[in-house]
Image (cartoon, rainbow, N blue to C red; front, side, top):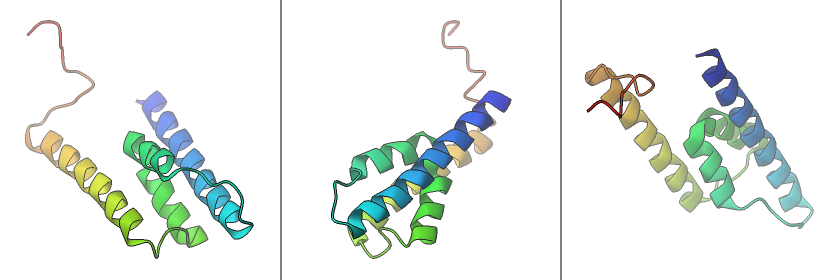
Length: 99
């Protein structure tokens, strides 16, 4: 469990830094971080880091298409967590090989 938390901390830190870097690149009209990269990192656990990066750096907060995609990923993640609580399942202990 500690390794999982460490992975989430690393992913969230990376996506937060990338959001800041992308905002900086936007200000100086240089090459940007692709939105798909930010969404991928959000999907694998970087939702909090991306949200904090958006708020802290005021990045992509006025772009409706980005907000919609961000919200859709967050909604799906919430549904997964709710599903896990309802069915009392732990995806880390499911035995895929013994039916």
